[in-house]
Amino acid sequence: MRHYLYLWHDPAERMLVASGIEFKDFLPSLGEAGGIVLRKGSAGTARKPAGYQTLARQQLPALAREDLHACGSHAWADWRGAAPPPQDADVAAALAYHAAASRRTGLAALQNRFLAFAHDDGWYLKLLYAAWDDAAAVLAGAIPPALGTLDLTALRQGGDGYWLQDGTLEVELKTHDIDSVLNRRL
Image (tube, rainbow, N blue to C red; front, side, top):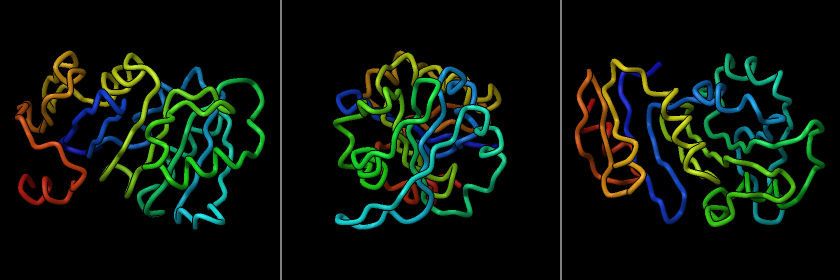
């Protein structure tokens, strides 16, 4: 578990950007999902997106114990239902090109709540969500009290970025450049 959290919210895009949240922090929120589709490593190319694998809900704790940090980048989306979704070009494209998918968080084939891109698990997370309540539930479970208290109502408004560390909350810039924030803070 990280000893800090950087976080900001873009309500128009239904997107959270964070550093300090790892895949394992999502496990409680994925309890109702059928599982996830996962792409590890390279995003592929426009003509040939990287493939993905489906993991049933029962397989997620084992994935959370893996060293996802070592695979560099990964992307995932949850899916609903008892059976894994069929291999779908739209799903592969959304996982490969997460930035282009920001306006279509819901993938019809998956009925998903989340579409996530992470680089070095815990270092950078871009989370697209279907409903704020789902994102708030993830945050409620992912922020240990020792880091500090985050006002989820203020975060929902999207005005500021936040830095939590050692029980203190500070306003921070909103940026995808996690390195610039961490270089100043750590």
